[in-house]
Amino acid sequence: MTSAWVSSGLAALTGHPDGPPLDPGHHTAEAAAQWGAALGVNGAALLTERAALTGRTRAGTISVGGSCRLLETADGWAALSCARPDDPDLLTALIGAPMSRRKLAEWCRTRSGAEIRQRARLLGLAVSLVGEWPHPAPPCAPAAVPDLRGALVVDFSALWAGPLCAHLLGLAGAQVIKVETPDRPDGARFGDPRFFDLLHSGHRSVILDPRHQAAALQSLLERADVVIESSRPRALARWGLDAHAAAAAGTVWLSITAYGRREDRVGFGDDVAAAAGLVAQDPDGCGPLFCGDALADPLTGLYAACRVAESLARGGEVLDVAMAAVAASTVSGYAPARPVSFAPAPQARTIPSVPAPQPGRDTAAVLAELATA
Image (cartoon, rainbow, N blue to C red; front, side):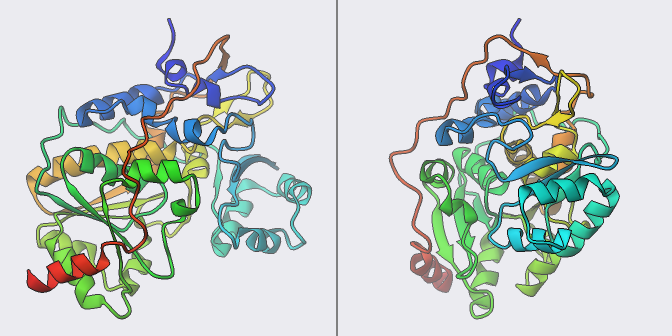
């Protein structure tokens, strides 16, 4: 019988580029399907649709997206992301020499994982040790998400997990306003435009500068039923945003971070999945391989949407959702991955005919609404 991992398209994204697709045995696709069923979508298929749109495929110790690498350390394996414009300079600082892939690999092999992680955290690099995160009990999903028509979702998040959550709440009827700042647009805008359209079609786009438009920002938050953010608490404090005060006023505040709000640590979908142990063990015993495409991101988006829908029925609260915990809840041990003879290719949903709004398209209209509210 074909496993859910294989039928979802995940096997095609797992393994060496010149080897067979692999099934690592994790129950990731089943968990995504459960959360998706509560939301009325095919959750397992959502895990692979970015790869379907970009045409990227499995690359062994290099992530599907190409920005993360699995590197052997003196006592194990680490996942290191180089996803931001400043990251190459930070990697040069990490190894103390002009960065190259060869030099980085050599440097990692002579250091313990703990030393690499500590130095990386000081520099703000996204580095994890494979399997470092404990495995919690699998999260639960509600039986069904209610009709959310009339609910207002204010989305400060970026990239994949938070925007996917907002997208799913929008499919359930909520109105979504995406908020960006003038100097920090969503980095996903510079990726595949079809994927961005898929997640943001039908939303409104607002650009606000917290330094000069704090009153408007606060007014928008007061009207929100749900706030989604993926920033570390100290960054929110600089904007004057207080999650617990908003929750006390009745807002559901969803905070999506790599390792939890108390952990001042950077992480992206691939390195966080590796930290959770969501990797494939090479059948030839050569170490871990990436599985899927940044799986901690879409898994968290699905799970978080279910949590928000549950929370709306109870009233205001802060939901602290750690991507590592969500990913780890779908891991099923570390047995060698099973090669499969045939793996269906990832599939994407139909791209909406209405594209995502340009940055700030709706700022004036939303500000006018706030002024008359």
